Image 1: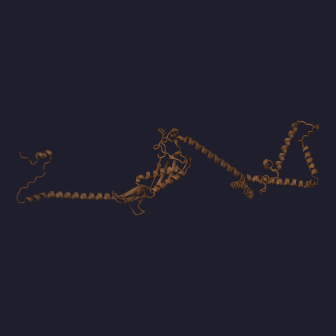
Image 2 (image 1 turned 30 degrees about the horizontal axis):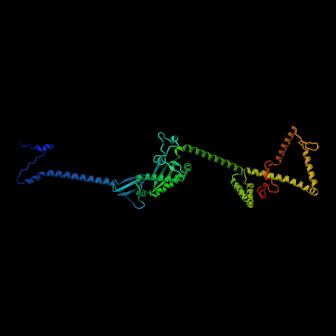
Image 3 (image 1 turned 90 degrees about the vertical axis):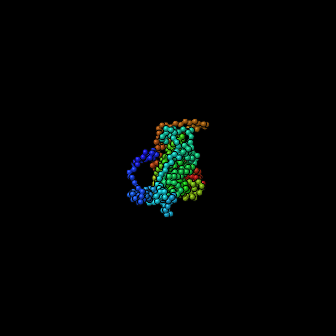
Length: 472
């Protein structure tokens, strides 16, 4: 059975269906057959050639576009606040000292030939878990964790962070720090960009361990700026030793606490210390107020002179003590003396004038009695004694009692009348008023028993310090 030209052989039809032929070439043999064949194929070859040429043009255009996109991909933008370097096959490019890129559009080789590695110019890190305790379940705040802590609760290494202080106690802290990349070439030449923050964290952690070893627990918790400054210096030294090219900025320790189990007790101790400081400051203020009221704003100089005088007198250097006393007297009696010191000195000067007037009268009286004493001492003494007795007996408050002279022991009982006792009290009060009116220092300047010496210097009463208590 003859096969139809529109049908495929049986074997090919079983493999895959094909569409029918759209053209039929009948070439008969004979002269010119080959030429006729070429002539029949020319339109098809031309169509195929045009299609190939068009595809090649499109391919060329695509390649050019890809090359342009590839080259333009090297243009990258460095944002403000960023720094970095350019690398070619991983090697940093650029003139010495000018390797770091500046913010803006940066033309460079595309990846993987070239790459612009960027870093933030400034960044910050926090250490919230390295030296901080783990709270119990249900405790969300520090106060709640402190209240739930028990004295026998252990601090578990690896779970609870802590520091060992100089006195062997434990402490917990949190740290916050800011840093700046000063030398991006050094930083990226030694470390990967993603490891920079961890590098700073480790330097701060190491520095904090060293700082805690220098302070006792109380000092670490109470000192405000000292530990932070020391931490910054030690952490910066670690970063410089590693060649990190990083400079630390502000370093703070926002939270510092004792172990939770003793935090309550330690808080009461801290409160007591603060109260003691307040009491001490108040006492110092009161002392300054008293000293200023007594000697004026220059009380420190006067106090220094008093202390120098006591030192020189204690050493037995009487000449130096006399010089200091003279300087102190000039300072107290000068025009710059103010406060109660001026009033006391004025009263002392008035008392000195009164003593001079009183002693002048006594000196005149004794000068008048001197010739009689030299002529007949016993008679003068008897006369003075009789005058004193007469003066005493003439007083309205004096009572005279006579006893019989029968020999032997005589027992007498005395009882003054109420009228006489009242008169005595009135006379004594009147006497004191008269003395106070005449002598402004009466009653305020008296010698004590240990300051009354027979045939020896007593209390110093003159500025020249010629005599006084404590002198040999």
